[in-house]
Length: 291
Image 1 (cartoon, rainbow, N blue to C red):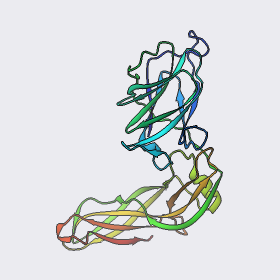
Image 2 (cartoon, helix red, strand yellow; image 1 turned 90 degrees about the vertical axis):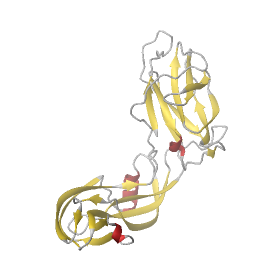
Image 3 (tube, one colour; image 1 turned 120 degrees about the vertical axis):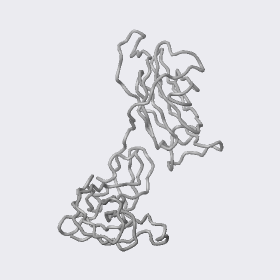
């Protein structure tokens, strides 16, 4: 996950007396020591008073070298800063302590196990060992669009469940009358801007961001059962590979959307989720959902 953190550093554009700027540089994070090959991540490095915090999880499954001490090893392709300015890398809680200062363009190696921060400072930026000032705010990560999708498989799975009743003990006939929201899902990384769009255009499956479903059903709870009733949508999933992703490597994954019947209603099933110890081994009883 990536965070932006505020600091109180002054910003210069062309001289030390220049006005504050909102310009942002793109900083590729690469897998090779030349920074000329694969750079799966491109992050926005905002001018002070912002610093960017990168957690190691954002590098998962992107081809970065594993660090024997934990985390990853990667290479920052740092651009040439303006005169009197420098890029600063920090490590540790918050924006962390300074571990690198760069006044010239360089491809620099970094290894870390928790988080790294990245900021652009002009003027009085302090000395080595200083803390990078700031507190986390909203995440900002450059999104990359892809140009093509190669389908490998299409299938159905059971989606996340929704509790649709209070706890109940049988025998009882429970009247279900409620509305639930089911959302599309994807295993593609957060670096991909719109995986659903290119997949939909390729295979003809429509991926709605959210679908509202009205449930009206009588569920019979058997004698001796104690628990609650849940409902789960059936999801239509497409698996394949996205490619041509603006400098990112090809990525394999899946995208899923709630399945609808001929009437446009979401297909799903009810489950009784038992909390009774007497029913160990029989904790769920599924009933298909029909209108």
